[in-house]
Length: 263
Length: 168
Image (tube, rainbow over all chains, first blue to last red; front, side, top):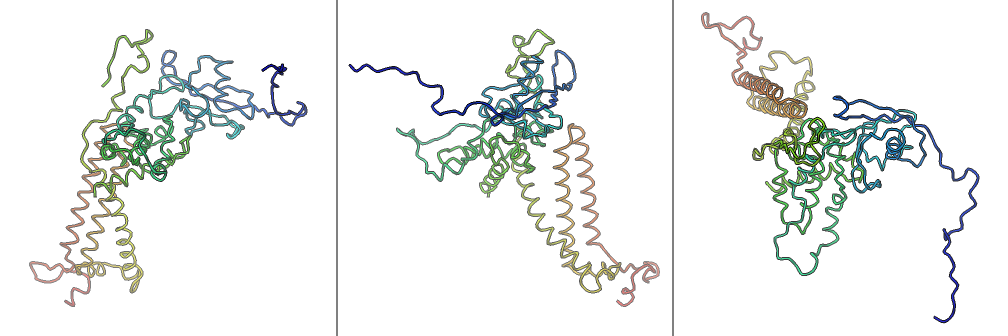
């Protein structure tokens, strides 16, 4: 390395950007009215609604509107969010009456001429504002044994599986446990003991996994009075799933599996 | 079970800290799995539904389309049908399947929509009692139906009997 090399600072962008100017790249902005159902047992016994008018941009999501309120207007507004990019599943909420992830619902896709209402997901106990107690939800999840059970001796390498066998349960591996499906289910609203779509989806993920040996046990768990037979195929769960899982179809496949097993 | 851990209580108004392990009892399943009753009920709804489509449409066709159609229906027509064991069996099956199908549907709706255990119990009791009464009553009518009633004292037919009884 005797030849002296001249260090050149790397440019900020390797692509030649057009001179900024004109209105070509401008993001449209609009006013929205955001109405949030508030609940704080330390302040009032009953829930109440708060309304804010905000100027938001075409690239903003409902989560950005909530952030704007929390960071600039009312710091007491409480909600869960972690990754803010549709993976962690923390910010499922009822937006205009439908369960959505606040970080995936773009404001421009909603009717911005009307008030946008945001509530906590239904059916689980509200703790504060948009935060619910997820413990009953996770309890059902635990009961279906969401882990691989294999009775054969442990192999030295990985357990092999054909692409077709992997494809069989591919849809249900996408679940992020946001509870949007379970809390959109009208059966779960009145009957909190119902296992709920999310638990069944996660059972489906292992029941149809060729490497798993505990399918029968999971089917037995879901053959309960509060199991798959409580499903009324209203498709609310499939509509609510932010990951596009065909939830109702998965539940139906578990029903068929229980039925064929007992015949 | 609601476990109250004093360490997990926040100072204000005794609100428990998050994840202190308590779950509202209304979310806890009572571990009494009643066999496969729900599965049987689910299968029954589908099978009886299919059977009822055939039973009801044949019933309607025979009563309303065949022969004189709607004008033939009177006391005598029904009496004539029930003199035939095939139609007795047909109507009996229709009665039982329709009643059980409907009762199970109502049971499901009550389970879904009744919010209190006591109202659920009451609604279901009324449902079960009324469907039992209707099923028993209907079955008795189909099997004990006698169109040509005879007056025991005079040994003659009552005035109210249909015309065909006089020809027998």
